[in-house]
Amino acid sequence: MDGETCLRQAYEAIFHGDFESAVFWFGQAIEMEPTNAEYHYRGSITCARSGKLSLAMTYAHRAVELNPNEKTYQLNLRTMMARQKITVARQLLEMPIPDLEQSVAYLKEAAYLDPLSAEARLLLGILYRMQRKYKLALDSLQDALQLEPQLEEAKRLLHEVRAERRRLLKQQYSHYNSRRNR
Image (cartoon, rainbow, N blue to C red; front, side, top):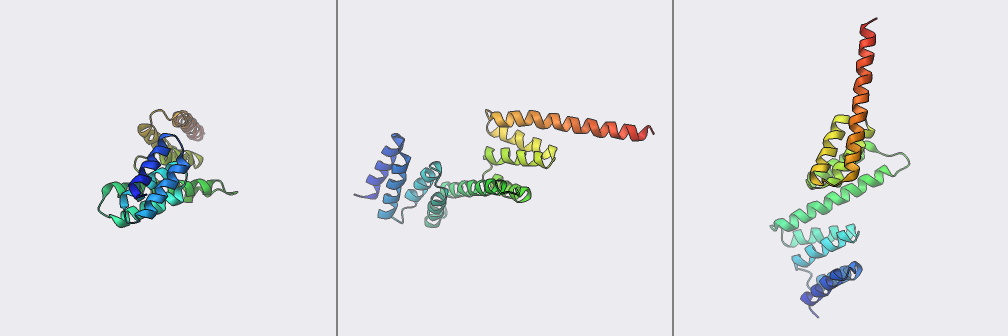
C-alpha cells in the first residue's frame, strides 16, 4: 500500500462520515510518505474538523516546514493557530475566576490570525459586553454578523447590547441633568 491508496481510503471514510477512520488513514499516508506536505495539509484539515486540534497543529506546522512557500499551507496554519487561541480563551473563561483580559488578548490574536473567524469576533463581543465596553462589543458583534449573517446568537446579543448602551446613556444623561439643575 502506498500514500495515495491511504489518501483514497481517508476520503472514502470522510464520504461515509467516519472521521476517525479518515484521521487514521491520513496518518498512514503520512507515515508512508513523511515528506509529502500535501498529506500533512489534508490531514490537518480533517483532524481539525474531528476536534483533534493538537494533531491538526502538528500536521499544519509540518506542511509549512516541508513547503514554506505554499500559501495554502500558511493560511491553514494561521487558521489552526487561531482555533488554538480561541480554545485557550475559552479555557481561561471556564476557570473559577475567569481571566477576561487574557481571554480578550487571545481572541484578538485569533481574529488577526484568521480574519474570517466569526467565532473569535462573537466571543470578543461577549467579553467586551461583560466589561461594559459597549462600542467595542457592538463592533465585534457586527463583524461576526458580516462574516456569518445567520449567526442567531450574534443577532440577539447585538440587540441586547444596543439596549444596554441606550439605557446607560439615558442614565448618564439623567444624572448629568439632575446635577446641572441643582
